Amino acid sequence: MTEKQTWSQRFESALHPAIARFNASISFDIELIEYDITGSQAHAKMLAHTGIISHEEGEALFNGLEQVRQEYRQGQFQPGVDAEDVHFAVEKRLTEIVGDVGKKLHTARSRNDQVGTDTRLYLRDQIQQIRQQLRNWQTVLVDIAEKNVETLIPGYTHLQRAQPVSLAHHLLAYFQMAQRDWERLEDVYSRVNISPLGCGALAGTTFPIDRHYTANLLHFDNVYANSLDGVSDRDFAIEFLCAASIIMVHLSRLSEEIILWASEEFRFITLKDSCATGSSIMPQKKNPDVPELVRGKTGRVFGHLQAMLVIMKGLPLAYNKDLQEDKEGIFDSVNTVKACLEAMTILLQEGLEFRHQRLATAVTEDFANATDVADYLAARGVPFREAYNIVGKVVKTSIIAGKLLKDLQLEEWQQIHPAFAADIYEAITPRQVVAARNSYGGTGFLQVRQALVNARTQLSVK
Image 1 (tube, rainbow, N blue to C red):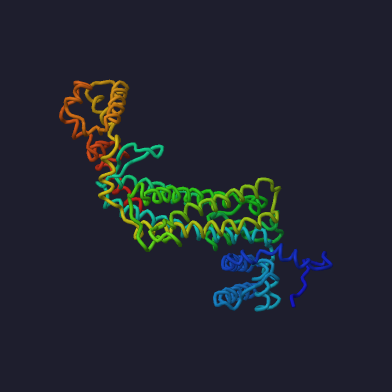
Image 2 (tube, helix red, strand yellow):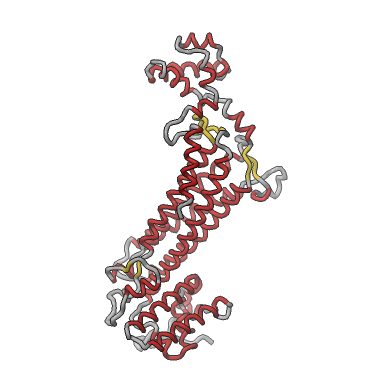
């Protein structure tokens, strides 16, 4: 039978069982248990360091907390809803282990600064793990790009054929997106890594605590300068969810392209059996489940960001119970981003193959070289806008005639404009069209090879 619990002598009866269940967070904040124990051990050391408790009491608290940690890891400590939250669960078990000295742990501390500390410790670890996954993702992108510098793929704007590009150049665009993600998380980390421990419920404490001591023990870079802000700030969570959402945007964009590339209409890639599934009634199908799931899960992370913004928008200072709702969104976003990065890394590394012959054909079957014809004329003194209009008419008449630009005879070119010579044919070959775009950051092969060198250099930064 669950023991009835009242908060203090202020209360005469326990919570209604349904309200107790509604109020409890132990079902999800158990995720924080090891961070809660780590933070509590630092707090116990500080209490002893400042003389608020004896060194013997501090040591008993530290060792008792470590026993709770080991019991949890071994499956011997599994608190239920009666514990309400992870903080009460740990403290209760600690008191069972060490006796009444366990009741001294909460001296000079509130659950408000405690949960803020736990959440930051958790998110700090998760950010580092996600950043490593981003590095893994980037490495795969570079590995494939290095093998495909001179593999050409149609480039699109408005999902219409625009200009051919190096496949490596296309993949390196996603490398750069991931690099910004990696850097963005580092920036978020700097604001996650600030300690609220010692802010108390909202106003600090009357005890002679040393907040910088606990911050150093827990490897925080700094402490909150205002106790009201320290217990109520969730900017760091919003920033993380924003960064997580942008990561998902990038993964979802490539997912959409992979879905298109795998279709019969594009046929740019072949999905391997290890990363695709079939239809329950159509035996010929091979479905791109991984990118479809990533595309779908993106909205899930977006939703958590929106929820966090809505939670915070009307909260008066300082702590409010609404903030209990921050954790599930953070936990789920962390798990979703990590799972999607892992799945997409595997998919790109071993789950698909580019169909090089199809790609080689694709870049020869359209008018994606029209801009190069205009550039050809402009390089020979024709004003670009005039050259643009001339080529537009050529494309129109070629379409009517059922021809591509490469099919025009030299006499036809010279009838269009006398500046055209026999070298026009080389200028509009797909390979030359790509190679010629040698401006910094462009798709020219020389630029792409230098971009790969730069990418490897970026990957070496930890």
